Image (cartoon, rainbow, N blue to C red):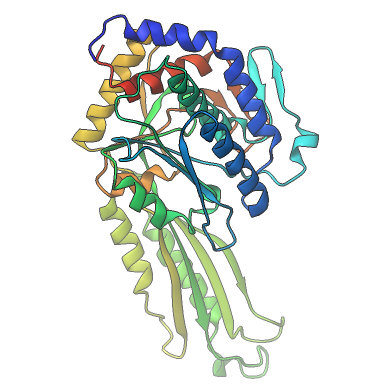
Length: 383
């Protein structure tokens, strides 16, 4: 739009809506939505849907299956060029709100899920409300997708995320900001592999030579996995869970180990997961079954995604705050969209601290400026 005064106008608009945004955050936080309680996630999704329908937007609550709650798909027809992406579920079990109630104190909002990522959802809702009232001039409509199972890997919603994202030219992820309010331009990919070993049981004292120890093969596999890590590339391969055997005097017939893998690039994911998947036992009497694999692909920066970041950073400057860039080890649903080649910018939610901790909190002063940034991106303001 090129209106030099547009960014300050949007900042003033959302400064005036600060209390509304705070109220929306509270409404979302008090509605607990743990991933493992699909009916509670669905109730939260339907609250957001009702809020947006009341303001003239089309909102569909979509069943996800696989024991997950409903997803929310809000869109124009045709969809906007920009998809706003987030998740409705949290890591906090039902009842946490009684132990850690929502609070607005000393410039911070606190409560279970406030940082990851209900404040980000509230910002998107506030921008939609401002658009409905004519204060935000959406360039080509409004698209929002909220998943119900991000915290557990988005198993049920992955295909929906990809299918919906392919209908858009770019994706803005409302996950919380990084340190110093940074946008997230890269995220590690994740892999999870479980190797199960079957050997031959024997008496550990009378004739151990007749046994084939699944435990010893599991140990060799764990060492093999550990050696696949590459500190120089910041690739981690960590055996995390293990179990073996049945009795103290029996050569273990069965064993299993789970390995957590993190990597910055697709090349590294293929190297690590390929090696784990083709492991051959040293003892030929032992069989191995390797299950699992890639969870979320790496979110690798591209020229297009970095251009999107630079545009957002320029808008932030016009709004009066800095928007640095950061790479983070944790994954999000933005990993899926980035892997599809769709320019993706993550970490557009507010600044705060303590994701997944009891000290989880959001900085109140950051809410209106993050809302103004999202609105400017949807208006395609060019400062």
